[in-house]
Image (cartoon, rainbow, N blue to C red; front, top):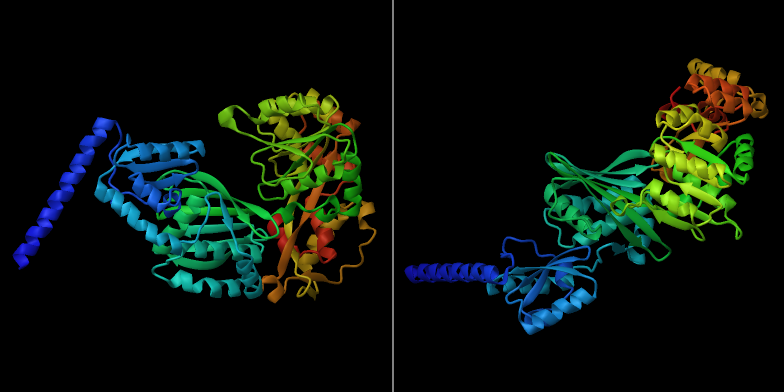
Length: 554
């Protein structure tokens, strides 16, 4: 009996081998690549594009989908029904790549249709988070600890059936905790997940490697990234659709020794809902900025490292000048947030639409105000400055550490000082410091070292900024409560510095000044530094001296 069974197995294997050999021969005849679906990934999202009965009639199956590109298994590409389905997919805007397979391979793909009902529908490029899921998260997730409890069953599970549900829980938790970034970092035995809250990373949970690989595939799929590319960096994005609003998520993958690291940046529209008054500028500083953005032409540059809030500040400027009689156009890389009533364009180097080329095109559209996402090279700098000199108000950013570094940086780009001097109206720099939680911040007596730090800063602060300062009897420190995840901080506020390009500074620029020269000019203009602005916010109870030193470190 056992011998008969062995013979049957051998015959089956032989027939299977013959079927695959025949498929290989036919693939050469039709000029198509051969495919073996037992060795290839079958994506259920792709399979769903063609209903099961239709796929069987056409003797085909869509087994992979990346954006609008499809991989399709066929037995005979000349079959009429197969051609009809392919034409229909083409009419819907899909690019198709055909693989000739055996009937056994095709049946393997068809058998996966039964898994679709259990597979929660999720469209590539977007994810709908149900109102129920969001409401559940907002009720259950009041702190990091709450979220850790909610995720714990998934993190410990060896097998996860509904991986789409896990991704939804992660994203709902990120929204509930106001996380700006989600970091998934594979290590030797586990994959840790961290959330960036108010600029600082916090450990959330660790997934086992097999669970993370499923999460990785799901996120890459909805981000329209290539599933089979694991050895180089990729970028993608998708939309979180909620009842109230849509949120963009930018995704970055990076190969590492233990697998691909993922970072998801959540672009929450409420981040840029801030107006100029909401930015946390000192009233005296705000008066200066309001005066400058009310001017009809010239350039306002804001500088700082990545994550210092420059985009939020520029958008606040744009909203301040946005009126029915004003034409505003932006060129960004990428467009992170969409602003109503403003023409926004995005850099696309592959199509030749760079900052420089885009800016030239924008000038032909007769704008009044132009926002240039970033000045990165000489060409962009010169076009932006010529625009500022010819009747346009230009907002842009530059990567420097402080306001005084702006002019030397432009000169490093080989920009002519004779153009810089008349074009730039104001150069400012900024950082973001965490705000003390209003529910648990503590009033404490400062140490002698803290008193000295504050006193030294106050000595240099111009008189108009000192009028509300009393004797330094106390400062505020972080506490920790349920409202702030026991961190002691909730939300962030900006600290700023700037200098104006007046007649004196204009003459100075023509001599190619150093940072030190421009810092002296700032003092003569009675402008405060970022650290001094931070000290004023420490004395006002908005932030702590520890946080200011961490961010602005003087």
